[in-house]
Length: 100
Image (cartoon, rainbow, N blue to C red; front, side):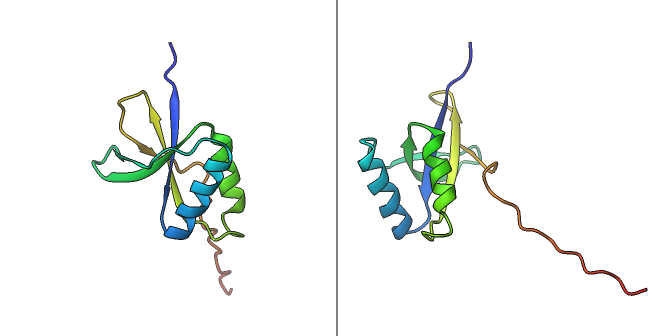
């Protein structure tokens, strides 16, 4: 028996909130924001999305559309949210060459 994973997006500003709501409405997937708790006890106001594809499109448009958001997954109906960091790029650290 596999556990179904639910996906959630938390907008971090009004601009991103509007873009996400508009896109979900266009897909007939817009539901009210819900407040859920993560595994550390913090509350998050999130949109549930039906497929991870929606999140993939947000990541593709993140820089061009100046989107700021967090992604959460939930494994099981009553489980706590888990911050999803797989799609987040880590900053590249450039090491300086030492003079010899």
